[in-house]
Amino acid sequence: MDIIAWVLIIACFITSFIGLVYPIIPSVLFIAAGFIVYGVFYTFSLPWWFWVIEVLFVALLFAADTIANLISVKKFGGSKAGMWGSTIGLLIGPFVIPFAGILIGPFLGAVIGEIVVERTTLKQAVRTGVGSVIGFLTSVAAKGTIQAIMIIIFVFAI
Image 1 (cartoon, rainbow, N blue to C red):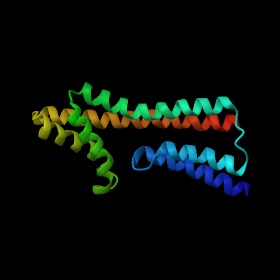
Image 2: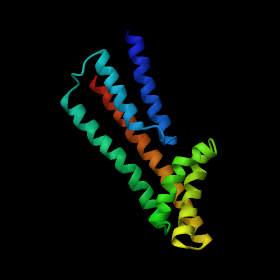
Image 3: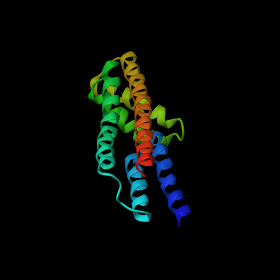
C-alpha cells in the first residue's frame, strides 16, 4: 500500500507542475490532493504550522498569477482589455495551437483586446502582447518556486 500511496502523491505533485504551463489544470488543487492522499493512507495529523503555512502559500499562488499578469501588461502600456484578452488567450491558446498556443494565445489575446476594445495602434498592441507573455512566464516561475517550497515543507513535516 505504501507504493500505491506514494505513486499517487507524486503523481498529484507532478500534475501540479504540468498545470503551470497548461492552465486548465488547477495546480493548487493537485498539491492539496497530494496532501489529502497522504492523510488518507497515513494520517491527517500533520503539525498545525504545516497547515497554516500551506494555506498562506495557496493564497500566494492565487495572487502570484493575477499580480504577475497585471504588472506586466500595465508595465508595457496595456489596459484591462489587454489583460482580459491575455487571460482568454491563455485558456484557449493551448487547445487551438497545441504546445505553442501557451505563448501565442496570451500574446494574440492581448493584441486583439487592445486593438478591438481600446483602439490602440498595432505597435502598442504588440507591446502589450509581449508584456502578457512576460507576465505569464514570470507567473510560471513564481508559482513553480512556491509549489516546490510547498512540497519541501510537506516532506519536512512528514
